[in-house]
Length: 89
Image (cartoon, rainbow, N blue to C red):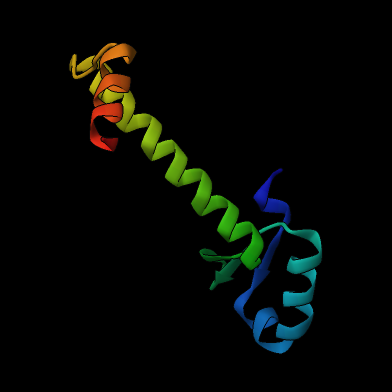
């Protein structure tokens, strides 16, 4: 999806806020808001925002795991399972 196709001015947003909100909720596509011809903000529906935040959180976890692997901070799965079982006792 090219965001450049979903661009509206701040004036358009002010004049037609309810329509714009309805459109982004139905389309589930972000809208770039411009001011004086320059992109200034992105408006997106709440469901898409939540999905984006969840995706970013998962990517952060993966990146942290990758750093731990690269740093050699890993243990065999057998050790991890034994440790977890010991904690439950």
